[in-house]
Image 1 (cartoon, protein in one colour):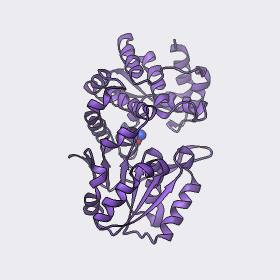
Image 2: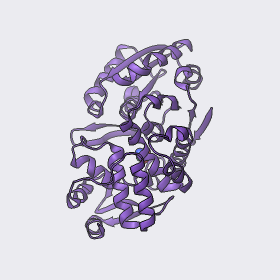
Image 3: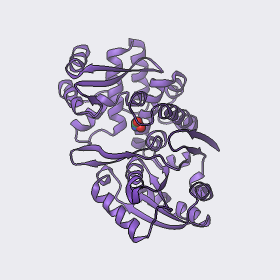
Length: 350
Ligand code: GLY
């Protein structure tokens, strides 16, 4: 088993091993040291892995209850959160018990927020079941729900007690969901690690399974390093937003329906590379994005997309922070007054 230690305000381990989901009960018991575990998951993941997790937790001495909600971003809302609170009350969950988030980013984010707020906070464990959740959202303690006004507008920093990462569960993902996660993996290579980028670029969506354990380990290690330096996202952690400034605009322009998060980030990375990298690096990035069946462009007019960046929460005062990688593996944080950012994007576009 591989262990990645995260040293932050409340430190924890990320444990990576194939088959871990079915056997993790005793590890969780030793970590959280409590009697009752409330599993929170969605209907898709519950069908695949709910019973296996339930069994290993019971075998390790937990009393287990399970809350299942409909899959999808629409569930990451106050209505589901209130149902989770009611479920925790009805099952007499106390501050000495724990929540176990079993699923992708939506499950992890809303369960983590419930754990941050119910009874002013209780322990929670992340068991991410998508590539994106394994390498990004389950690590670093960002939890949130969406509001009708926008995504992730209510949230808290709440570090998990541990993260259980089982690469075996990726075998049940659709191609589209795997691609979604690979966009974030490409991002990690671009911002911090040329060797990781080359490893990803020398594979494609059909054969990446052969090296996915290595990719997961390297991506999580990068995220750990960044989060340890800037747990509360006031500086270096912004480099994780490479491709996200325009990417968020792409998602929002299409009402979060046409492009997955990863697809939108892929478009955002390519747009930024075209404006800031050599032709050779831009080509390498485009080839890599295409190898994972991700898009490099969309039909939305750039003047509309760039205006939507103004609503991005990375805008501080009149300035907008954005991430540039002139070389692979070397991210830099840039800041421009919003109007100058718009000018830069429009005037340097192809
Ligand atoms: N997903 C970006 C971050 O955790 O800061």
